[in-house]
Image (cartoon, rainbow, N blue to C red; front, side):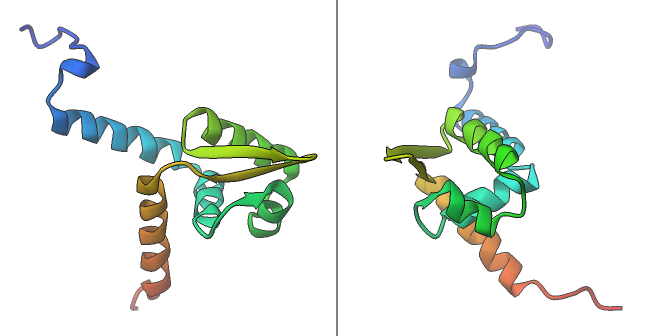
Length: 112
């Protein structure tokens, strides 16, 4: 196979597929607001109002990020009356956020 030939994603070795999926997730969560949303939801399901209390952003911006995370399969949602409730769709994403929160809680300021 030529070095410039593109391979179909499903024909790559399993480890390459895992790395590709992880890179895609990290790219999606590289926006600080999205990471804050997902980390807030690691505590459990919340509606938009509850998320606005935890994530410092505007309602339109929050809704845009929630929509992106939902379309990409990171979040699930359900409607209850006029309220939309969001939750993390994947245990892998929840574990990643819990690891970030543990690391942040244990982080110490750099020594001078």
